[in-house]
Amino acid sequence: MIDLHNHSLFGIDDGSKDIETSLRMLTIAYNDGIKDIVLTPHIAEEFKYNIEDAIKNFKILREESKKIFKDLNLHLGFEVRIDKEVLKKYEENIDNLTIDKKGKYVLLEFPFLDMPLYYKEIIKYFTSMDITPIIVHPFRNRKIFNNLYLLNELSKMGVLFQFNIDDVLNKNVFPKFIKVFKENKVHFISSDAHSVDMRPPILSSSYRIIEKRFNKNIAEKIFYENPKKVIDGVMVENKVLNNFNFFGIIKRYIKKEEADNGISL
Ligand SMILES: [Fe+2]
Image 1 (cartoon, rainbow, N blue to C red):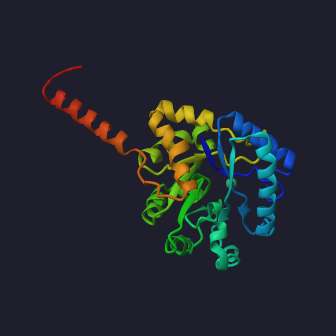
Image 2: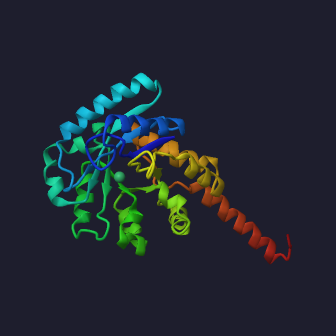
Image 3: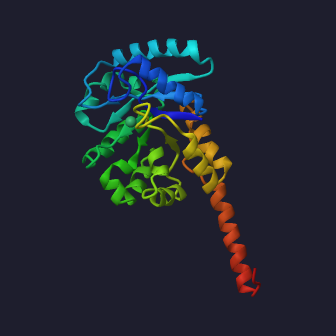
């Protein structure tokens, strides 16, 4: 599995405080079967650091990690708040905010309560440079959570959606999550891990739920194939459930035909 959204990088934001905690978090992830992690510190007004500090800590952690885990790959990205003032600082070097500086994918976060009036401008700013925005945990924004139609609006603008494991594990949110999933608006599920205990980097429990609810192919797409494409900087298809829907339609059609012909099953 691949974790696209993770705060195990130490000393930068509200995630890991020190390198020991980072290594403990990486151990949890590794033991859970995660082999690639994108470390994504917040870029937001309340976190004041230079991007060079994040790069420096990333290199230190990567070196330490290599000594313990031979086949764990760390990548650097950022979770960028949709905030004009924050983005202004990076205008000159916008590729720095993209995953592994490849200039292909960026994680964007809405504020929790509102959607800034200019959010479409920001999304267009990235897409016009051929950078695909991945909207992280859209359900954490109250407006989107209460009006799922907003996801359609966003989707039309060419973004992809990353949901958190909480959306899968929380029984109250799950039905809404499945509705959105069936509309092909779930492309990735990530841990958004911040700690070893309260918000740990564990994906396997969510993987099993998705596998049971849909099938193994769909789970692989969400937890491995799609995030792998992001890391490789290649295109991710907007539709996840193409085939699933197709067979669903055929099944319903056959059932209807049988009902019309008076065949009871
Ligand atoms: Fe996050």
